[in-house]
Image (tube, rainbow, N blue to C red; front, side, top):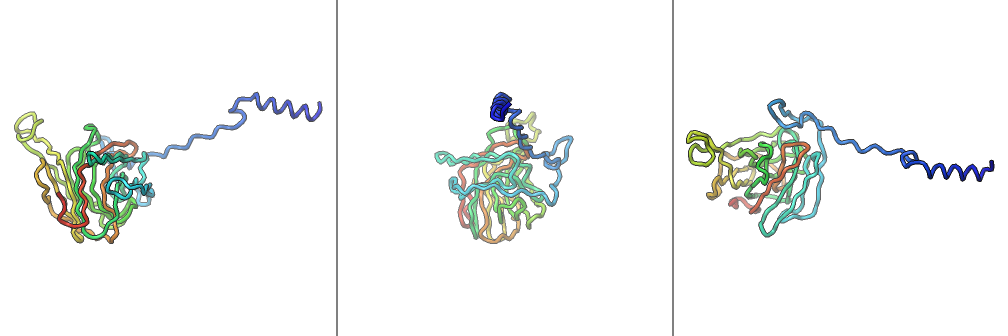
Length: 272
């Protein structure tokens, strides 16, 4: 058989072969393993701090959104976050996964603006899905950087109603906080009896930076914003990041918070 005939037969055989025989299929990219430490707390599991050397770089977009200069997935959670702004309602819808904003590193969607000096920041907070994880948290947060272990001061409203003010005193340190749970016996609907304790969920929270002091502000039932508890002390060098964010408290599942009527001023005394 001539060489030209042999070549023709080889080409025909190649064309007749199934695609899988022509080019070996590439394996699908592996899904990152979900670390056991990142699983949320439950009756059968205790969430613990991440390993000291575990970090993820932030994923950042410099496209402005509303009053903010950019947005980032701090800690780059396993599910990418997103956000949108409705100018007619003055509302930011923030969707994010994330194991927590706690311990020595954070994972959350962050809408931010770089600022220096004193700051006043406040927002109404709502959760469209009433059945989300109880420790999910919408935050008003001031950070030195976008690193997942950055020094920071924040106030948060949790899904189950807890309010806290917290700080990470230095890079890589564990977060420290003051926590507040507000409730009523007989003055809020939902109790089985007048003696039932019903959680009061705040409508609006705020944070004020005055020098190195950070103060939590709260409106529980629509009353004027007022300081709540003692301030926390933290030094941040300007410029730093100021903004709003959300974490589902689930490392591989996103949830959503809506933060609206946001007030941001480059001065103390402007929380309202």
